[in-house]
Figure 1 (cartoon, one colour):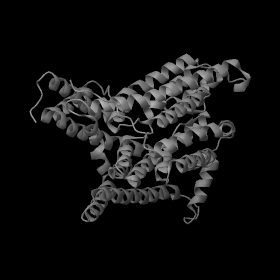
Figure 2 (cartoon, rainbow, N blue to C red; figure 1 turned 180 degrees about the vertical axis):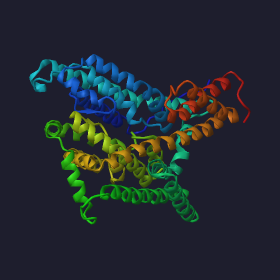
Figure 3 (cartoon, rainbow, N blue to C red; figure 1 turned 90 degrees about the vertical axis):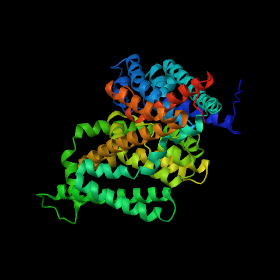
Length: 463
């Protein structure tokens, strides 16, 4: 019998404390309705704070929203990266926070109910996050010590995407503005790719191809938006900002903005705990003990810091409009905006990453109103961000599926590759019960366990 030894990093004890602190603070903020991770849950927070919807109902909704994401996306990619994705922590702390009762008619320290809710949220959130840290590292060690080692191979599921993330802008410009612009963007990316790759570094080729295609998207988008806003208008063509300001004034509803400003003021009053959570997350990102996504996590863990930041920047561009808008409407901030990891990993050390994110949270909160007013004036930007999210998901779905097939082939030869294809087909016929972009990773994980079972009973494939 092969002995399995649990090997933990030298600083693992400190890592667990960081995770416990992140879990405690995030659960407390969720309990007060100040910060929620899941985008689908934040619109319900005003009803929770006002007492219109019972917390039990909102907790049930949180559980349903998070469960599929948790097991089909967060878990397999966390095991593949050997570090937890934020989804593994915050999906649960959302549920923990909204499940404990609170009194929103009085200040938190004036209510015994709120104090008990805060205490319970903090303890449960800390316990869960610490358990996640220990559990992921423990399971990864077990996987690596199986007859067919799995941990190192599973990390390669994201490899196809870390080379083709330059396609994010290519698909976006195609969906938004037509095939002709998409072909032009692909051509630009291709020329840049080969020009840089000819110098001997394919990772650098992916970086510069992404920069080139993103610049092409920006040029096309600005031209289209400018044309829309100047069409049939008497505004000076050289003063496009004046046109945006006019539309912003026309779209303003005084009653709405009165409530929006109250929501923003509510967030500002809680800026210290909000910024403190960001600071803890910044330290964890920089230390590479937690990641905001499988692509950036894989790039950063292999030493490609700038590409990882660029991937997070693309995510931020696609999500910030929606996250800022929901914050203004609900009075509840998103737990992360994807800019957080991009900033943290570019810092020289963990404490500067913590400080940078502490400051970034202030910047985000105080920019809520101007950003949302800009989005009201230029709704095309919001539409473009939604299209970019769709494009990112499509690239990830295809890339991770191919990556999962290649990893499964390491476990069980071409049977493994075929099994991934079959699992993808079954999932499609079943109405995508598993999140499409997680099928490749989850299928590779299942193939690995099946291959190890047959290896253990003497039916393994010859090497």
